[in-house]
Length: 149
Image (cartoon, rainbow, N blue to C red):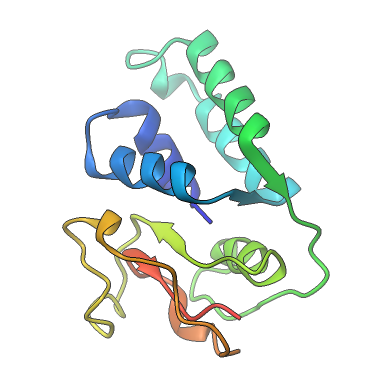
């Protein structure tokens, strides 16, 4: 599971840490999305503020490519636990799609609670631990996180 900021960072800075994390995730796993999480990067990248950095055509191609490699997850169970309710949609995908990891560039107040959440290089972490249902602590952290289900 990759959040919007991480995906957009992949497009804007192809040599950066988010790009390496996205590329590694895509080569070792499957990108999980919902209708909502797939629409958000398209909506955000449609903003004129990105015009100086990436052409509109490149942004549209990027979204099309994402759609081609992603697995659509039906949301039958919703999480309402994030400080920012807009982030719940990512947990919804992770839970319903049985994600092994969430990769995000969002740093929040809980960032230091998990030593494995290495803010310098989120590509260092393996699959998340399984068998746990408490996802409330997953919001606002950086890196690859677990447990998710």
